[in-house]
Length: 163
Image 1 (tube, one colour):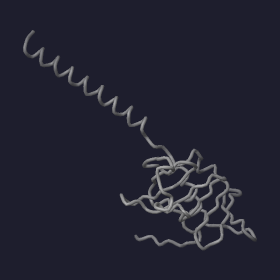
Image 2 (cartoon, helix red, strand yellow; image 1 turned 45 degrees about the horizontal axis):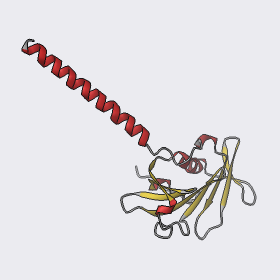
Image 3 (spheres, helix red, strand yellow; image 1 turned 180 degrees about the vertical axis):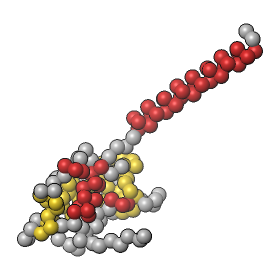
Image 4 (cartoon, one colour; image 1 turned 90 degrees about the horizontal axis):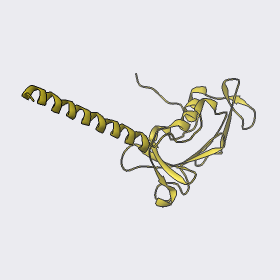
């Protein structure tokens, strides 16, 4: 074989090996992906409840495309804020662990800092993680780590945007 031909063959084998490794890594990443916080579709959620320390549980229902507070006399709620709460259902999970791996009191889940109900599925929010701006969230018998931006706050709370 000529030297140029053998170099091309060696280069082709190296490229093929890299493609195989890249495919293996993509497959492994897809298998290890933590997925969303729940299997609920945020657009399909029709009932939300929010329990925060020191306040009564607030109940909301979506009717005709708008959110309504259902405690007492029905009143229109902040649609954008309630849609943000519904979006929590699809929050990206950084990692999942069995609830038994934690002492609930140490991660703020005894009692929870907030409880969000989405069509009856309860999400219990705990303390911030020491590793970054993330919160512990108990969903059934598992605990997820999600971005702190999903931590429920009162839908009546006003937020100020900086421009």
